[in-house]
Length: 91
Image (cartoon, rainbow, N blue to C red):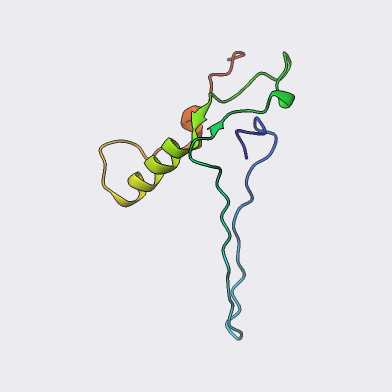
């Protein structure tokens, strides 16, 4: 969401309140684009005053690398969205 919105929106932080007197049931829901999707800031949100802040990336490659790096000890940093952030042209 942060890349598509060019930093306008962030994903919400997950929070849960524990109640020691009552059981809680959670039903997670995950949405992911198709593996062939190129994720990049939407054209409607880019202009001269607000240039693209992220370079395009392939969702399938990103997701596969995240899964592999979460479950294996690799000699590389765990890939994050900020790895696709473009340098700020103002500093």
